[in-house]
Image (cartoon, rainbow over all chains, first blue to last red; front, top):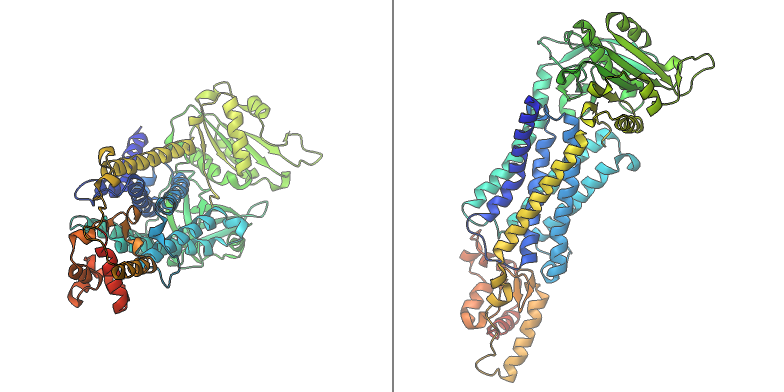
Length: 438
Length: 139
């Protein structure tokens, strides 16, 4: 309930931030009307830029503001709103193009006035931001390079757009409004200062040391770190951090990973990572004693947020990591509630944490169902993928009262969600962590 | 589930923003005082324009087009509706128009002055006089 209330408050704050520039346009002296479509075009141009400005707030990783929703969903929202705002500023241009093309005249930057060129350049920057974010993978842009590009292109776009607004000069040309616009622009600069300077500086002052890199099965590694000269952090089981290895926290080379260790043992933080991408493949080469920087914890994917008579965990491959953190935490707390884990893997020898799970079964009321997609001839357990009949067979009678945690590849998560829905499990009880948004 | 809520809030935000933009555009342009009614009617020039002047006015019209004046000005509903020039010939004298088109050093340095924007215009003497004649013909 606490999360619902604070969630509503934060959504209210977001709406005020997005709508404020438009409200400022509406109050006080405004130039006389210039035709409905003209004024609509100007209003949606302002609205679009206000929304794009607030985009920084969504991804600034404010812990308190993200807590009610989960940081992953804020990124998802950031992406949705970016596309909407881009459509708005395109419509701002297109409306003028249609209603009053004389105004636009030549697009040649050598003859057009600078503020019109700024506007066109801003539009191109934002188009590039959208294309590279939505199609990063098909375009083959490495993640680290993309992040840098994303920051630089948005900053360029926003400053060009503010230049365009300043140059056009109609709506902000009153003594009361100019300071507001300056404050609006300054707030971006302050926010960027907070995210890119203050936070990395703070991370540098609170470093961690790698104490162990241990191979698990299936090309997966568990990396353990300890706080170096400071109290460290506390987290909810199932949460994640942004981890920086072999780079400065200022370098924007951080990657999100879930804790796999118990939240009751915060002195040693563990992350279980599958070596598959450009960054994850460097993990096996990390040695004890190296420095690590953490930004977090974040995320709403945690048993601690729900009171339920029991929990069901459904993991695919390395998606077991955050679930392992929850199971280990519950074991450390001597939780007696009934738990079910459905763990899907490709092959028997690739099952991550098989022995650790067997050990946990002695400490918890935990039932584990392994499902293999490519079982060997001697496998007697479940085969194939997690389907509705398998869930129906495995879930207990009171399945509608339980809370469900799904973590795995997206196709699996979607299928399981559909199956649970078909089994009349309320969707509000099914929790997932969104990742791989770009 | 959370994605559904995120999409709902995105829709709510989008809807509110669009609604406010429409309210702004409507409040600026109430149906009873739509733009064409507000623009002063272009009355025929009181004195007939002499043929020599007519040529000058025509060449001024070309200067107006070449210099893309429509980026900031509108005549008879074409161009930027923010600064209509309809009837300017009746409101301003030739000397006043000249001062707008070619602002003094002092006016050109005033940062917030619309007059200052004309400082970027590069007009020859005959071009400027033709433009003045054209604008004077708008009554």
